Image (tube, rainbow over all chains, first blue to last red; front, side, top):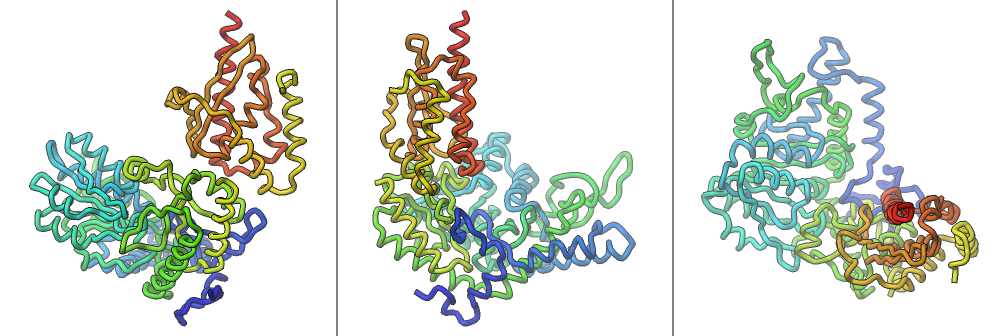
Length: 415
Length: 145
């Protein structure tokens, strides 16, 4: 198969790969084949350069100084917020809160909104396929409120059983929090359908969009979700920055998550008046460089185009599925109809750790273990872990050939 | 049998064995062979009490004293891990607890194993060594009393 270009003329993969310096590194003497994109994506030069450019030219604290640098930094910071707003089609920038990442976004909602709306005897619904970051905050909230946490079950293909969801939602349900795309199975969940049902019971819905942001166009107005969180580093941006979207009416009603500078309007020794949205939720000096460069990552994705990225990634997935089928003895965990470009699997009879160790030795980066979804892998699928190869548009068919050859080698070594 | 050799002699033997391989794939193949040959631990010991924490794969380890010497048995659900434990047992098993306590385990650096493992996996290796040494500390205490 053609290793150089995708059949979409607008993407020249060879040229694009040159924008990612790390992809030319060697590991164990081999060119790296990076298949751990669901954990974090690699960064293009535009993103890498924008970080130094910020520190070299406009580094200054935002929303404070009267001086030029501070004004320039503030403008760049707020421009980036506007880019993020457009990226997910939120109504206004007051609904776009800069956070450390998806995890902080969800914790903010659980702590500030969850504490307010969930009481004793109430119920919160999540699913069996949640990442720990969308499970533990709700588990702790429910423990502290004496509320019940319910899980939408997952079928053997790794899809949500939505019939069960319709049976479990009731007048006690106060909140639903759901992963948009599963990080360990690849399943794209029918979130619109779930949101519609939830809203018919007046239940707000939080979406964990960490895996969705790099792979598909997100439209929060069309989805009508109440909250949505994603991370910059999984979408070619820097670590330590992400976005929490919240509908204005919810954010207005919520108490601040943290207290400090930036988030106040006025302070006396007796009383504090909080700042307007979204600043109410941005206490302290934020990750200014990260926030600005998140905008650069958005630019990068939009330059490529969501459709081009999607088409390329589906070609890679189809090719990998075909090769995996030819190798034999591979059990794929997560075979949903609607799936993103990752394959979670085990080679029958071989521990994921063993497979991952050998692949690493061949310069192939995969993730092994529970992928922060321990209950799903261990309790639901009864496995000691899986191997996960997660693709990005910059992966090549040749790299997938190497992965397949690596898996055949693993089979010959252990079986 | 290796019982008559000192810990450092046994370490040297392993360093010698590994010097025969010129790349890491061959070293892995050797470790996998050792892993497949490691005697199994009794199912009774496959519980939390005997589990080594900090490994990506499950590891269980037990030690018993016999005639003043400490003998280890271990198991793992991953073969490479078993192979690595097999090396540790080869070096430490059948020695006096005091000797085990003070063993430097230099051979792991000499064969390049520590350097080759990611920090994540090196943590697991250290956890195994610590668990083995803890048994030695426990039993050397009993000897003193």
